[in-house]
Length: 336
Ligand code: P6P
Image (cartoon, rainbow, N blue to C red; front, side, top):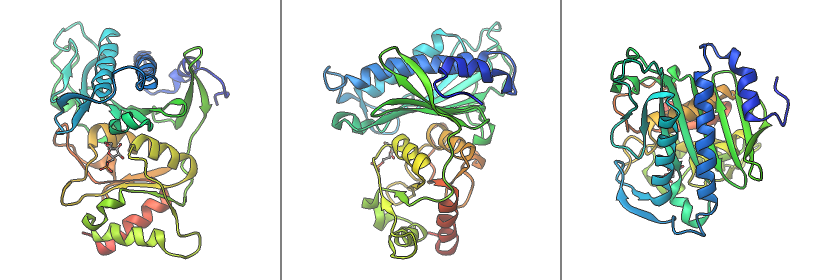
């Protein structure tokens, strides 16, 4: 068990042997994410001072305005992971297709691919609300030294070897799992070092916070409407509190610490939900389950969903196990 105030670097080395795959490659990969997180954090923290907030003038594949920091964060993570020559491919919310990293070089024995949402919640940047980076890591399924293929990225969430997020909030934290629990590290900006501040993070089984964009209420499936009304009834420990920041990483992080549920259901404007399976829902679902929480689309476990395309969207319900169970109960009874 790691001691508090251990640095991220010390923690990675100490726990490297517990990771079922050999070699320090995954450790080097987490270290490169740590470096990119520090670089992006520096820019996010001064966004208001330098002309890097606001739209970049481009539209990403999601049809969303690319914020300048979106583009910056995307470039920095891809640059860092490429320079360190650790992965054979990267998929990103900001890239139409996956990016192959020297994978056609037969000497390239790199076995990991990374999928990232480089700056989730970026619409909050200009109003100084927390944003985050989300990452998901798989071992490639095609032979090393051959060109990386789409199938290397379209893997079920249950195949992830690591996942995590960086939350650029009142403090900057890196929270990740390699399948052996969830640990949170807080950046000391004065010296640029992440310290273990939240060992073995777990969702309380119950909570009294629900996070959903109630502006879409009329558009929700009946089961979700019924669950929201359940949260609002005067009964026992209810009504619950509604907290929705509009930044998945921040809502998830708060709910994991205090107990709560996050929902992004489908609706007429988002017939499959809004969140992307591969680089938002899967990594957050891996973290949730490793922290004794739960994640599904209301019926099917998120990490069991068979991916069909890089930027596919799914409905997402995630958080304290008993709260997700209750929401699924309403979905089974009342459905769409
Ligand atoms: P809405 C940010 O764009 C994001 O992907 C999540 O971080 C956030 O929870 C959600 O979308 C906000 O979406 O439609 O409620 O503004």
